[in-house]
Structure formats: structure tokens, C-alpha cells
Length: 126
Image 1 (cartoon, helix red, strand yellow):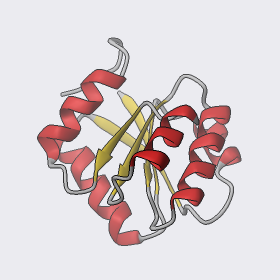
Image 2 (cartoon, helix red, strand yellow):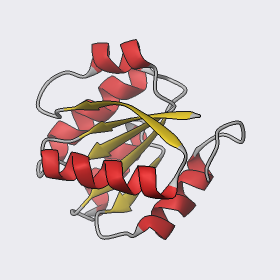
Image 3 (spheres, one colour):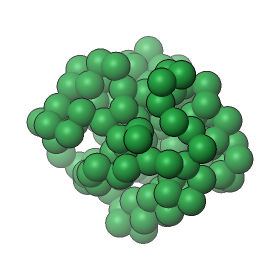
């Protein structure tokens, strides 16, 4: 089973992402983390296969969390969910280690397509 972690500031966003992952995929949500502080130790301790990072209304904070997650779990797929679709910060997210970015308004089918592209063949995408 694919181990997933969600990083977001809002419990509502954490719940929404959890529901989407559990509804559409065979994932084990191993941890939720607030995006306001360093997540390195949490990511390293739980070793997720997938890390979903919410933009958290301030892209520099999301970029910091992406970098921490990438260093702590080099093999993990990192998907960034954003409401801000400006090219500069999204390009930086990819340079910092994100595997993909997706608009917050995307539905479960789009999420499924993105995950099928970024997860390795050994991981289950239902």
C-alpha cells in the first residue's frame, strides 16, 4: 500500500485532501503535518511514498516545505496543490523537488492522472 503524507496549514484542507486520497486511491495516510514549521523530522520518520503539499496561501512557505520533504524522503513523489497558478513560483516548486503541481480546483480524476504519472510502477494507484 502506498504511504501518503499531507502537509497543509488548514485542517479543512487536510480533511479535503485526505478524503480525496482515500476515496480515489488505495493509500495509507501515515501523517498530517502543519505547514508552518519544519517537517523534515516527520517526513524522515514516516518515510512516505507520496507527500502532498498545499500552497498554504504563501508560496515561499510551501517551497520551504517542498525542500524539506525532498531532502528527508528523496524517493517520494511530491505533489503540490495550489490556488496560485503563477508560473514563477510553480517553476521554482519543480526545481526544488516537486514531482508535479496541480490546481486546487482539480477533481479526483485529474488527481488520479497526476499520481499515475508521478508514482513509480511498484506503487498502487487504484
